Length: 203
Ligand code: NI
Image (tube, rainbow, N blue to C red):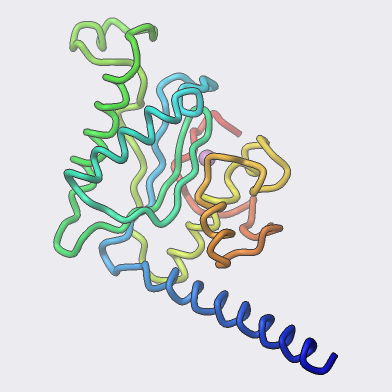
């Protein structure tokens, strides 16, 4: 009994240390001037183009990262928009080229069935993404952590699920697997004051 108790205590301690280390690792991901939060919207509000074609989206991101590397610190894909946090390599802040390519590859991988405005037709543009997106350079570890929470709580904020971990297209699962966050994580304030570039007509 004594031994068993000892082992149990030890493993609990081990888990605690592991969680602590994982959290430190996670905080170390922040790079001053090199970590960014993004909100990117699909053109059609209330479409499900992003989750319906999640494999195409993932593939586009994977291919772009091979050409222009970046670390993914957090990502959530909702049906008609996404939020994510990237850290770019030192002395490289060209997230614009990465987004241009991700959007382009995603469009190329889908058949041209979307409605096109006259302007987009004339310019031979696809009609899947809003042209503009929201970018915020993360200021410090606290800003970084707040935005990571914002990303992970987002499916709850938009009313898709009651628990953040019930949403499949989220890096929250990675955080839980690595012991950074508990499986029943409910953190992150839904009424967050973060100006995240959510659609103005959304809520
Ligand atoms: Ni959102």
